[in-house]
Amino acid sequence: MKFFVDTAKLEEIKKAEAYGILDGVTTNPSLMAKVGIKGRPNILKHYKAICDIVGDNVSAEVISTDYKGIMKEAHELAEIDTKIVVKVPMIPEGVKAIKTLSDEGIRTNCTLVFSAGQALLAAKAGASYVSPFIGRIDDISSDGMKLIRELVVIFENYDFETEILAASIRHPMHIVDCALVGADVVTCPLSVIEQAFNHPLTDIGLRNFLADHEAGQK
Ligand code: E4P
Image 1 (cartoon, rainbow, N blue to C red):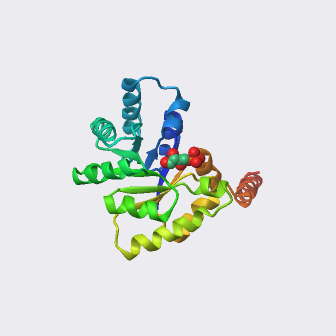
Image 2: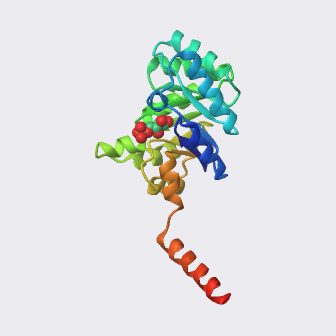
Image 3: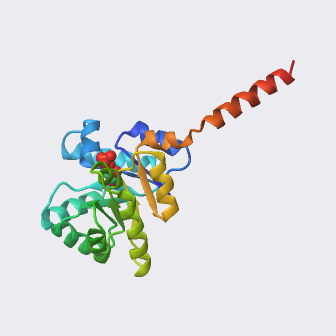
């Protein structure tokens, strides 16, 4: 399973990369706004800075919602670096753009996916990734993991090459559940990746090992 970090903050991306477990980065317009980058040239520069930190798979999202606008932005983003994956919203104009981009050999990530029907359309159009938002589904008292389970079966049934990128991850059990059902990728805030390191028995065990070592040296 691939691990992506879901942030636009360079310091967080560097920290995740330094752990040696990172396969990519996802951003979205809200995450970019949080970093406070203003103006198109600076936004593009920021994506380049992200590409310079990680090995591959940097999802950069378009703002346009019409086919022509999405295509223009997608070409601009894809020119930044070969690591860029163009993130396109799950709307009819977005699916049309995904089909053209896929035919052109430009990788895409279909975002804001909340149903199996949506994911199926994105996969048919040739999306490299689909991003089901499991946390946001859980937030409305529904079952985000159920959607991941459905997508694993559907994509296997038809040998789709599209990868399931589980997004909107809220806690380490989302990561484990995604791994159990066979999601291809999880994209997590750095805080959730760091939570996954923790276990109280590890802390107690390490404290005792070090104390015993010290005592043995006396
Ligand atoms: C995924 O690509 C999105 O950026 C992200 O996972 C959304 O997460 P949120 O629901 O916590 O905003």
